[in-house]
Length: 227
Image (cartoon, rainbow, N blue to C red):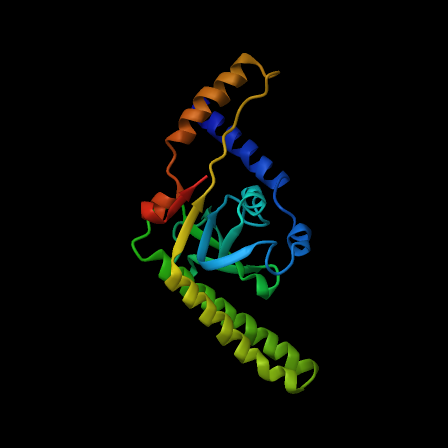
């Protein structure tokens, strides 16, 4: 029970830190369509524990790296309160920011009885899910636009879907990079000896031996970037 309490407490504090330090969308929008840097070919998958918002680790990337991938996907693995999640409901895709940013969020959902070890090509499944999301998204916009007005501007909706889908497929051919950020918890100097032992020793040991998302998704080491 002591180990479970320590793990739960440390995880909760780390999540609280991530929530409080996530990058605001206002800051992202102020950087412009290019995010203030060069966008290079390829897809960047950024693992995060946040199911909403942009993790603080991305703020470090855009501050210190001169270039980033053409397509960015924030991946979050979550356990849900059902025994099993079917394959067609495993990935939940949403868009982050304007279309020209080409930024998406993917929540990988597992039931509490599911084996959290993927036995399929995650990259192909993800790209397919994103393209399906774009198609549905443009279809909804098409219906809403037709209800309001009909003009020549509507002709570009289907073309927009094809252009973005083609861009994502080309980015996939250029390569996929998995980016995993490691953060470490440390007790405050003013903390009690018991709390220092629990966080600096017990929680640190548990974190070091915890299975990372790249293991679940069977990521090749040549495609993995750990920060």
